[in-house]
Image (tube, rainbow, N blue to C red):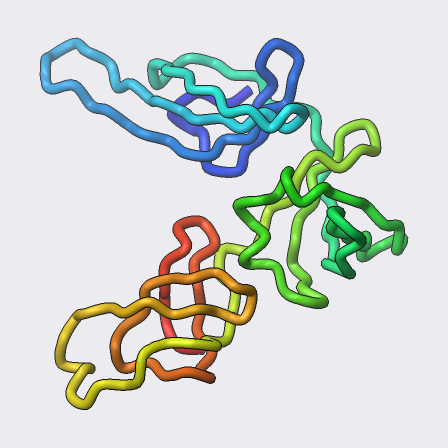
Amino acid sequence: MPKAGDLKRGMIIEIDGVPHAVKTIDCQSPSSRGASTLYKIRYNNLQSGQKRDESYKSDDMLKEADCQRIKVQFSYIDGDNYVFMDNEDYSQHNLHKDDIAEQIGYITDGMEDITALLMDGVILGIELPSTVSLQITETAPRLKGASATNRNKPATLSTGIEIQVPEYLETGETIKVNTGTGKFMSRD
């Protein structure tokens, strides 16, 4: 059983018998003596998709949900469902696009290194790798001398999402994007 201070993004915690995924963790350290650190956690209910906010002291004990984690590969889109294939037994798991709305912009054809969260044989959600490589499909032209400045410009990526990238990047380049923050990391 993890303590609130040991929580990490992506962990699955059971609250009132329902699995919740940790989305964000905000740590607040009070300045007065004797006060304990507070953790404000935002959860995503894996069954209903609703968000839930909770506050804990650093040594509060939480119950980790009994989830099975399997490696899957993205196969194809079937209407409103995204189909993932288990890498071991080749079984298929469907997730509705609304269940993974925040992650769709980082999923590419044949993408591997995805972890699926299963509970009682039913897929609850997926965990993407921390970074993905995507191609820039549209951005403003490159500016001369832009590498000397730290300014950004909008760029549309191959999956359709738009992020801010440095001015020296051009259309057609492949970049690494952090899937947790949605920010540019480096050229690929």
